[in-house]
Image (cartoon, rainbow, N blue to C red; front, top):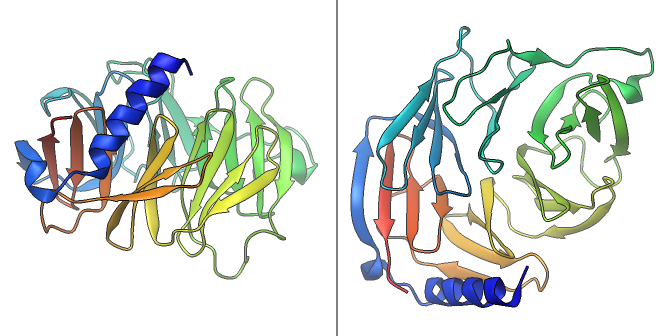
Length: 276
């Protein structure tokens, strides 16, 4: 990241640190949405998956621009929009994934994880979580042998296999989200924190905040709601700061930009602005 970019993000984050509830300004509120998963692309478009497997795209002001409705209704376990032109969706229920374009259309049916070998380390048994990697392959958490795997989508086989039995308690884990960012892999476990791995699937460290449903990134910060608090945590220095919520509502998810915050309850999306 350039010095200019670093200065920009420091300015953005410093303004977040001093934000009070009264400094958020409500732009738009949209009730009546059964919100399950959310994501944001580099152009500040917002993506919301509902309880029927539909995916909605909103612009930065909260206006709906596109909609995707699957042929088979099932929960979307994870939606990831950081690549902008390739929107990744994964359904644990169906054990399928797909890539949508920026108009939320696709020219192919959903992809399944194929068993091309008898070696279980090179196959996907049961994918609890899956997300797209920077090289167009997938990171997968495989419940069947309790491991992280990097799955080659062209060869339909596993490239990297990293067991987690020495890191996670196999009896009490509850994985909620997975994302690759700045050549690192982050996986949130509701019962222990956010696990951090390198690009070969080797465990590095853990961010010790519990009860995290999802997370996202702004500059060198990972941010999330943990135990009813909105936290920004620097992934390199380990310094964490708390941000005030704009209201007393019980928010489940949040997406942040340099001048807006998108706050989600189970049935409502609110768009707020703030001044630096």
